[in-house]
Length: 463
Ligand code: UDP
Image (cartoon, rainbow, N blue to C red; front, side, top):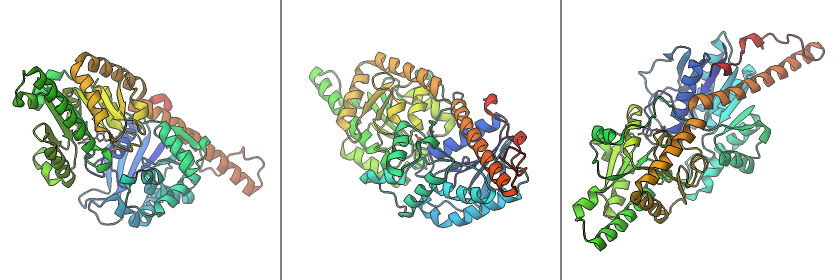
């Protein structure tokens, strides 16, 4: 069996996502693990134990285990506080690998801290490492408003990981360019492989039915913002954009003198979904309170509705109920939510940054706007407000694009090619080293025996 270890210190595939530190990485790791295991691979996901009640080893699906490593307190902590506990995490990872009688073909590290732990294990057990960074420290620092609280050590560890990973996964062309420009990465070791969506989970649902089930007004123009509630997501910009649209509509209806204030409010709705709190507790989340304050100061609080955390089983309903999906971060290494909205045949307005720039085709599947530009956003929203057929066309084109290029099985097929390539290269290298050590010619013999080709069949055919 082809065995893969996915290492993801702060982002467990078992966590409910939507809070500050639980989002795209959790979904990425969960979906890759599930897809690989369904295709016949053996998959272990290593993550930090953040709850005493979690079993050390959870058999999540056939051939798929989640292994909780003890590193730091068994309770949720911010990822910035985890750096301190990474030596313990790496030690536990090595202990597990050593005690396992069969062997991983590859270690796939997610985020730089897991990457560092993976490198420790890779050196000790002669295993190849593939790294997906998910975010890059130097790039975050370029965006002044997005300073993270990791020390400079982050940059040194990222440099080391760029130098020593056998393969690097860039999630979009911008990520690729950033790795070359800011990390002097070797382009021969980088593959551009995006994130994806699950076509069984995200399908268009009849809009009237979706609104009825969610208790939303049938007649309103509904703008949806969904994702982690964190400052870099630019949710305040969406509120400002919708406030400007409201002002434009009010001016228009005043000119026509045909709508009263209450009807005007009902005609426009901004739903903000996400946060690590359920709907009835949204105001317990400080960031949501800040956003609610902005909406109030702009006089749009009556039109803005905070949904709190959205379970994955309700995502398709929420996307389908909306007329348009909006996401305006100022930095986005990839961005799974635009894809999910496209999968539900919704037009997407996103900022022209990072992965959004490649998933959304301006004028074809939605619109690209500059970050921090509520006026540009309002202008695009107004276009869709006045022309529902345009939204329909963009949404259908988005769905076709998402299905053609971004399903998880597609993503995992491409990842498998990388796994197989780096595993074969590592095997070759170790055979040569073993042959040289024993003076046994050119390394074409059986080598150390630990690199048994029969145990590494390619899983690609099963996807
Ligand atoms: N998500 C969710 N419920 C929420 C908020 C977010 O299931 O309440 C999911 C969302 O559907 C997507 C992921 O979290 O799959 C966010 O990923 P994305 O890449 O858009 O952003 P990131 O979290 O990586 O910044």
